[in-house]
Length: 150
Image (cartoon, rainbow, N blue to C red; front, side, top):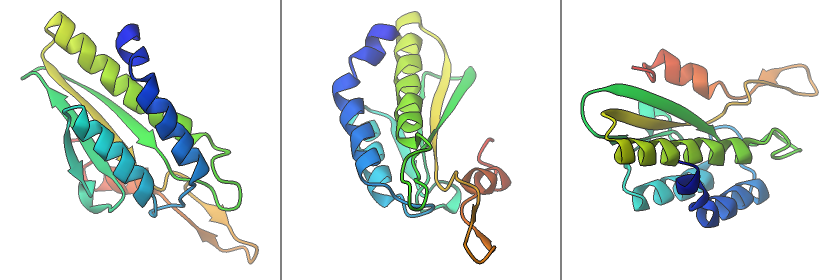
């Protein structure tokens, strides 16, 4: 599994750097989602865009038949004014690496089941503005409310 993940370094490093250099705020992560889903589709995953009605969410899956489900999530939104100080560019590629690694292990060892990655937008739940009002994300909560873990 380690070698399988390491083999994707030439694809994952530039993706992480692009996300870091192009911070996108809650529910506006269009560039990140476009690049992530393109990579996953190129790697043969089934990708559902606009997952659970959230425009910048996705679900990518690989299945070998009935069995256990292994699930991960990737975050890719940035914080206002400070960008990716939260490390979501790194969390994003860690989720992708986990997805790729588990798929490799499933293939190598004949493990039945599904491995899934859910792209979770707007993870930074709340920003308090200068006027004291709160605004922001809640993408994970919305996905859960809409049955995203079923």
